[in-house]
Length: 152
Figure 1 (cartoon, rainbow, N blue to C red):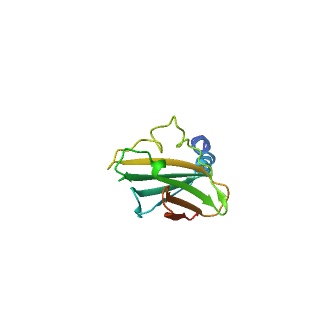
Figure 2 (figure 1 turned 45 degrees about the vertical axis):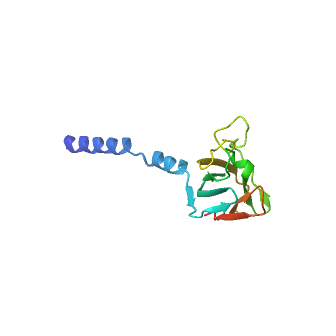
Figure 3 (figure 1 turned 60 degrees about the vertical axis):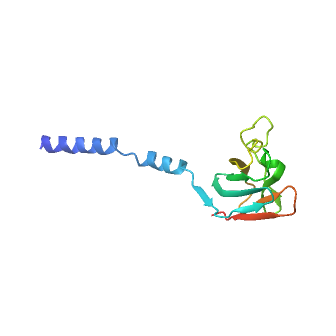
């Protein structure tokens, strides 16, 4: 009888000590859902092309990355030829990654060689739950394209 009672107590202690459901729930609650969207479009403009556009949404941030191919005949930075923006409804989103900071020469202000391809990474603060419109355009013509990121 003492042996059965001892086994029951050991079993109860083992069961109480291995209960980690509270910890697992906290881990699951702390995991953030990430939404990723890839666009197959090649956006062609006078002197350059934009491709491999990817958008990632996590929390209240939108990360956008794309490649631009310089066909201008000159070594030049992206912002001389084109522009990129993001909106939600009537509101323009603020770019917060300092990609356009003059001291950050590795991103949008990188001087890309003629015929060269360069990746640009941007980050925006989302302002609401509406879909996001990514706008790409030429700085020298009226041509622009819009890609829609549908928020889930």
